[in-house]
Image (cartoon, rainbow, N blue to C red):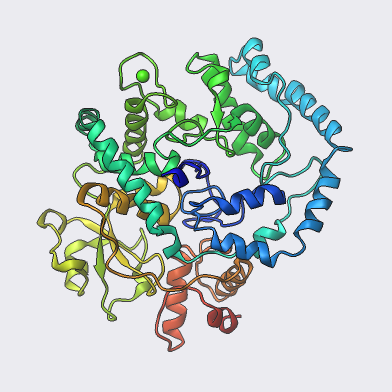
Length: 474
Ligand SMILES: [Ca+2]
């Protein structure tokens, strides 16, 4: 559990990821070697950078070994960023606050007192990822280009899952009445809420090291997603202005996500609820408010009461892995008629047979397969990753039913560089296949397009990238 508590925070689902349903590994690593070493020690670094699902440290170590240029690059970055140019950046930031942000904030009803208090002593934090120095163009960081995407199986490292499931069961017992009341009102099972809470912040134990105004201010001033963070920054000011939280409580993750459920400020304004009845939605200190806010978020995105997230299945060779995806749903009875069976000899519940399900194969033929319900895609609204949503669903099942792993095993796939995957994606696009976007992350559109290409070219469809495919599809 100690290991888990040291896990970096996961910006909750509301942050758009370029990666579609994959998390970008390597994209959010701290920008200097000292922090990288610290990062390497993080035992749960499931996916991409800061997101849930960062895979275990091994890949990071490999990346470090591979990047012999790093000390040089870091020196270069430091020369560029400090201290000679730091003062001008601080000045530019102050000028931007005053001349650019303040007029908009004022127009939105933010008082001068709130504005000044929020930014008192705040300077841009040049160590945050994805920054673009004023006057410079955004470039793909070298480390991102070289980053490996990990084996999907590494996302489900047993100690990571168990930290959530054992902690979840403990808290399920301790909060039984609260969870029952939340389920009664919102229709979301308590185990799902517990899995998210555990995954996001180790049940609230993870430290929130940043000042939200520093993070959001820096990113709204100088990052690759300025417009997105400007909206979030204005929402953070609104939280303070409306007295929903004092400035001093606005601690966040490196991405600006707040509190135990890791809500971005706009999500807080839309979805946070007061469930313990003290008149205030307190996602920092109140467990009932935290859990109910997560439930409210999921309901907003369409959680279907009475359905689970999905079922692990076996998929016969006669069913193509290219049938995967949320836009290729069929009645579960139809999937069953095609030969898809639940693992462990269980039948699909009768109540599910007439309802829609979706084939999900996160590692193509090289891993477990699932029939997902629409609720799986609601979980992806919390964090845009198939692996994240699967982690939550699987974790919830294990909190409810005991720790047993997937029946299918994850193959030793992965290990390509993102630049290789992106090249593969561009080549598929040039041949008319839909890969979502050529971002170097094999989401479901990429996976099934690979399967279609393989079938068309007389190969067995694996629906997952490998080195041979990268060489073959050019
Ligand atoms: Ca409350």
